[in-house]
Image 1: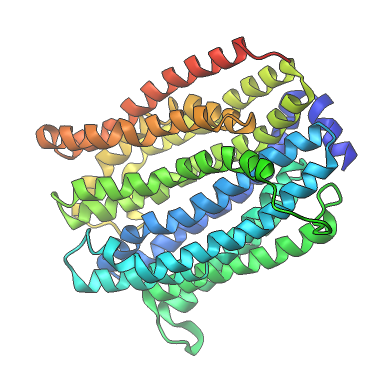
Image 2: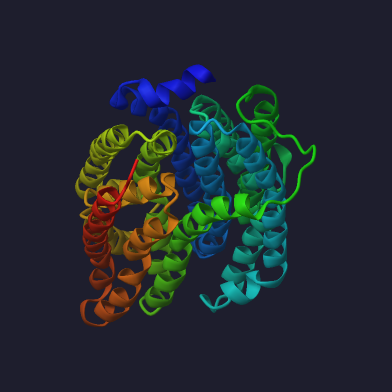
Length: 447
């Protein structure tokens, strides 16, 4: 592990970033492919089934937001401690993380029992859609323990500079999900056809498999971070360090849930088809943003390590390289959405009404992809530096503060186009604010 850790402080930045970004990029692409394939299968059940899964997205994404946000807090804390050669704090961080993952899971079980139906009933008058959505959501909430511990081990592996193991386990889980989806949804090999319930069971089964494998390897094959509860006591200082980054990160990742729920309340005034199409966009865009997030994941431990080591020059080099790599991905995604929106929509058996809504939607929103490079990278950089509030400000501007009220306003005079145009507007304003915040931070940074 010493070799990998030293590399974060000595190896040329761009090759280092690529080597640390490619594995999470691959795992993110696999995950994005799973999301798309999952929706393709569900769409073949019925448009109501697709709408039901789209309505479930906000609550389902909250699981990812909490587990990944908490994991990012763990990773940033552990990576800084590794850079500062503080083995005691590294162990304490891992210990606290193991306990609080279980706490988070129990909270989601309670949410599944008490919140699911009241929340989902606000977005549909169809009893059939509501029942399917509740069935799907409760399954993924009750068995969210797999997501919690998979991302726990993944983020701690990443803190050490090991990006291969997270990629491997993410890939296994996603591939297992893709294989299991049609078997359970359509009832292959003599099994009953379970529809959206089958999609949910396939999802949680894959997450649990990935968690078991990744935790097993983490406990045996990660010498730099050890679990040791001898003399353990809850430490408020450690928890503060974790949650200072983890809470803003979780809020940032929960923003799509809030955004989708808010925009669904706007889109319902147009049609249920508009909700289904927007739900598709949320999953389709992950095919662009997840690889970009892979670069950010590769950047975080490098930034955290060099911040802990006091190397300001390498911090600047890492940010520049991350901007360039992410920009290439976002440019490719923008061109794809602008040139082939009809083809993309037809992958999901889109009918004429869905095409009428979806094609202009993809083209308008895609305009903001390249601009979003700045906000995505700077938000990730602030997370790596332990500055969760600055990161949160950028993400709030990108996904909530501007889009929701502006969409509600413009939809009245410009229709659906008024909803879609708010996305590139928000990215532009968030990029400007992010640049101002980062320049201020670096100007006053004393290393």
